[in-house]
Image (cartoon, rainbow, N blue to C red; front, side, top):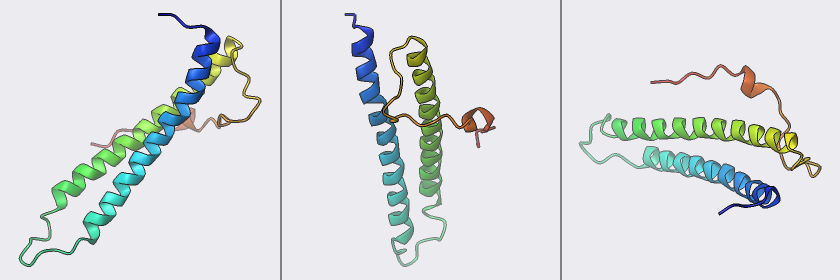
Length: 112
């Protein structure tokens, strides 16, 4: 099954922002979950560190979501560049973020 450049461009233009928003929603939901966990009263006799493992796993998931957002931003810039290169998009409507150079300069390192 093949599709034309115009169809592919239309799909990517629609699906990429949807994917970006889904990552934002997932990060927000995980932040709300962390808030709820932290605000939940401790049961009598519960050790102060009892929730620590769960909080650490949730924090790791949040870090991975943020890394995924970074990758999605890079993907967006790359797809926009490809679209311009093949003259499939011009971004006249301003829907795409302006390249800031931040992603190229960012020295993000993985935290274990």
